Structure formats: structure tokens, C-alpha cells
Amino acid sequence: MNNRLLELDGASNFRDLGGYETGDGMRLKKGLIFRSDSLSYLSSDDIKKIQDIGIKTVCDFRSDIEMKESPSPFSSSTIPKLNHLPIKTLGTQDLRELSAKENVTSQELANELQEHYVLYVNQHKKVYCEFINTIANGEIPLVFHCFAGKDRTGYGALLFLSIMGVKKEIIIEDYLLTNQFYKGPLVSEEWRDSNSELLKPLFEARIDYLNAAFDEIFKKSNNIEDFVINELQVDIKTVDNMKRRQLEYFILL
Image (cartoon, rainbow, N blue to C red; front, top):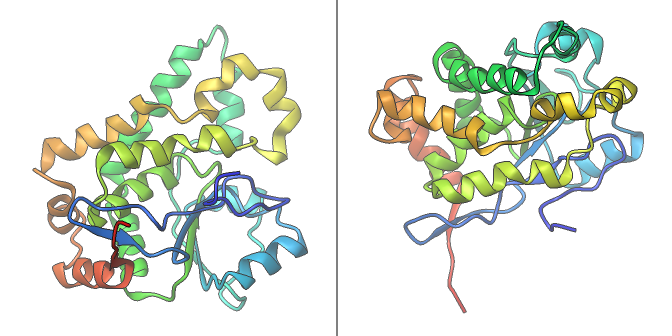
């Protein structure tokens, strides 16, 4: 099993973003920043594992409706502490309604989801600004997640890893690990399985999706750090502080 993965009963895509090398001879420290799918179905043993690896903050990108349907086990008074950063996108009910449309095709679903990656760039700047500020100045270790740990989380990982100096091809490789680990939404397994071929675009990580976000960013800025500073309004000191917290030198043996 991939050594990034934390094996849990109630989540299948919980993994460490540490260890990736940057283009300038640095490496992300391990055990500080994690990404995951929904944490709503964690067992008590799962929660203990998360506490044992030292997680102090949970950033949850799910919408208010999703939180109501599948509440988080964490709150402002738990350890780890919940930081709710809601992004309204295709939740479980939306996916059901979309897939139930008469004569809808798999390609139409893929196009709809790809468009959401463009929306993350243009319509959710305040949320991702707060996310970056939390990594830079909040309590870490930290895990961020959404429903599948693929779309809203995938875009968050794109921003974080890019700021750290990780190359695009490695960011895409990390994104595609979802296809290896994600077992699908526990809350709707019967619905998912009955429509498995039609719904593939909704539960797969596809390069075209992430590239849609990259392309939209590069329409606005020459590089992603400039985009974060100029478009998301993240202070340069915050970016520098995040790098100091996350990066280390390493020696190739």
C-alpha cells in the first residue's frame, strides 16, 4: 500500500502530502498536511488514528447542505478542531438529480464536472484564501477534505503544492492517486453501483479536470504564486511563512 495513505474504516482517500520534492532542491515535510475524502463516517478507531498522528485542524470544504446530510464528527470544540470552509458544488443530491436527467450522457457529466474546476478558480477565491492562510498561520498538522477528496480538495492541493514549488506533473500524479484509493461514497453505495458506467466521470480523477483549473489560472497570471497573491489576495508574508513551515532541505544519497 502507498506509504502516503492512512488506512481508515470510514474514509479511503486520507493521505499525506509530505515528501514531494520541489524544483529548487527542497522537500515538503512529512506528517503536516493531509488530504482526504469525507470524514463523516469515521469509526472511533479512525478518530484515534487521526489524533495519534497529531492532526489539530480539519478544513472541510463541503457545503452547508452536505454538512447537514452527513455531519462532521468534528466541531470548534473537538480535537482536532473543525474549520468549515463551505464551497457549494455537486453534492450527493445534485449528483443524483444530474445523473437522473433524461438521456444524460457520461460525456455531459464529465463536461459539467470539468466546468466546476473553472468555477473554483473564479468564484471561490475567498475560501481558498482562507484555506492558504490556515495552512500558513493556523494549527498544524492539518487535513483538508470535501466529499470525495478529489475536486474541491484537488484544487486546494493544486494551489498548496504549486506554491511550495512542486512541479505540475507531480501535482497531477498526486491528484490521480484518488483513482487508486477512493472507494466511492459510503452514503450512496447502492445508487453509485447501479449507475457505475454512467457515473464514472463523477467519481474519477481525470487529467482534463485539473488541467482546466491550471489553464484558467494561467489566463490570469504567469505562475500560481502570482495568482495566489494577486487574485486570491494572499499576503506575500503569508506565502513565505507557509514555505518556512512546510519545506526542508534534503540530501540525495
